[in-house]
Amino acid sequence: MEKIKKNFGFGFMRLPMKDSEVDIAETKRMVDRFMAAGFNYFDTAHGYLETKSEPALRECLTERYDREEYFLVNKLSGMFFNREEDIRPLFDEQLKACGVEYFDMYLLHAQSRNNYDHYQKCRAYETVFDLKREGKIRHVGISFHDSPSFLDKILNDYPEIEAVQIQFNYLDYDEADIESYACYEVCRRHNKPVIIMEPVKGGNLANLPPKAAQILNDLNGGSNASYAIRFAAGFAGVMMVLSGMSTIGQMDDNISYMQDFKPLDERESAAIEKVCTVLRSSRSISCTKCRYCTDGCPKKIAIPDLFEVYNNKYVFNNPQAKERYRFITAGKAKASDCVGCGQCETICPQHLKIRELLGKLTEEFE
Image (cartoon, rainbow, N blue to C red):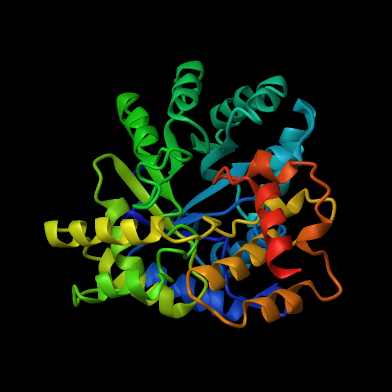
């Protein structure tokens, strides 16, 4: 992975949008700013932005920069193949969509006990390792959303895996449902480089409630996001921290402290602990708006948007929350339209009890 220049990556999951389409002009500006600052790691997946991420990456990056200038990561997502024979055509489609002849790294996406059998039955790991031998992939890794013991199982089953991408941030560090640090320790025990996703927890750690934000403001230092990203990047064995940036302002902020990276000091670490105490005492829903849950919802409920309304009421004391709920659901599915199928819960990286939460929203807003 010698092509990687720095330990900060550009995730193509939360790009600037205009009228439901990727804002190409703004994304080009962000790519250029990122590259000019000496960074070159880009991460995408076939399903990101309803399959709009890969073509946007081609238009904004691969058609404009020499292939050796950037390190490109893509993923094999289980929802896009049903049998072994589907994988190679999907992979070729991804290469074409991205405008490249090979991927620097290819991750078996969102591995957990809910989908691992599917990947094994379809010989997905074996196919991906074959693609590496053929030179179409330089490195093979996994992204992971499950328990430390299950991660240990996968790494024992497939020791050829070269890197692991895990959710890791200061709020999930020792949460029982996520176990970020314990998963990190498994990676270290297997000597696998760690890639961090969701260091700002889908923006939640950038948009803190006033009481928590004040704790960081009192440090007279950087932005809320800066403390979250620097926290994640400061651990040994972390080769990359990803950020899903959607504005040039976010890009500039991230570059300002990652270009000459320094880990948190003792005072900053103590402040982070205080922020965690405040956040855990709130009634927030820990949704990162990854939108994996919406893809398979038979009623097309905008689950992350509805959860955001709930958080705005209970974390930020927004008096207009009920009106906002009515606006979002006007002519569309409401929380009460949930049929209880549970597809959302099987894929949620945060392991949220979505059906139960939708019931709370129904009582609260309908």
